[in-house]
Length: 366
Image (cartoon, rainbow, N blue to C red; front, top):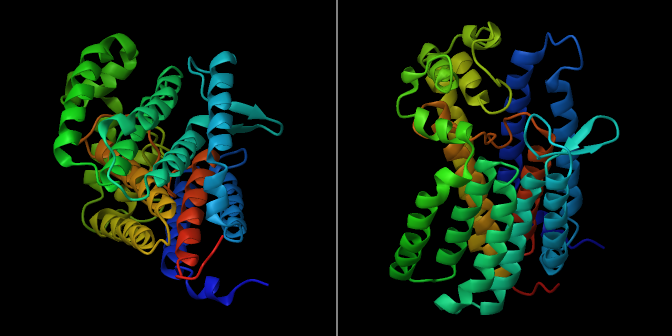
């Protein structure tokens, strides 16, 4: 029999916020793909969101401590998937997807973020709340570095960059001193900046540098950002209205339903719409951190912090690149952008956070 306290402690505000953002995402995707002669992306997204929501509800009945317990197995499977895509034939010059029957494609790098958070939470829970020493970071850093390098080789710069703040925030949450963190950051950043020109592809370097002056190459590396800024700016205060965005519907704006969906939303819904969406994201993050604070154990605390950091970084990087404050890295906007792997990853993340909150009462035992 299911303990009624589970439902009493379920964070309904967080759950409804997730559904609200996902609905806005489907409607925005529909705005730019409804006249697709094939199966429009918004129909596919409805299926993915439905599957993700079903996964979310199903996992609520599975103890999060069990999920963390099998973190090593999940991590190994993630590494195997990343290695598999590197050995598979490339698609458009990159190695990112596993093709399944029915035209379904899964992106292992999306799920690798989850496996990293789970394995780090599993390992760091062994510290039992005692601030770690520098030598204690060797294994966590190694676990992160292996995945980071495999994803860089795909290449997938955006996803790999997310792993660094996840690692840093978890170390900070463990009580690691700020002075030591600054020292480690310096040790990591200087070599990374030095070798990046030799690791990154030429088009990736152009993406990183073009955001400083996109007008220097308006038809090349700066095109995406210029069109995105025009779309956001032309939305004004009130927006142009649903399905009335000229930059998106006249196909000036590229990758409208994935990387640049925030530009579509901003053009159609304007500044007020952006405020609404950012408010929903803020509620999502606040409620996620609340569940971390209420966690009954350190593993639950760490996993909520890691997942919240993942979502937060994707929001900041995606919106930042769309308005020209950050380089274009190809990261989707959580619950808004089209994509099956991203949808499943995001719903899994929220399910674990909800799971931790549901089992927060003092006499709870796994």
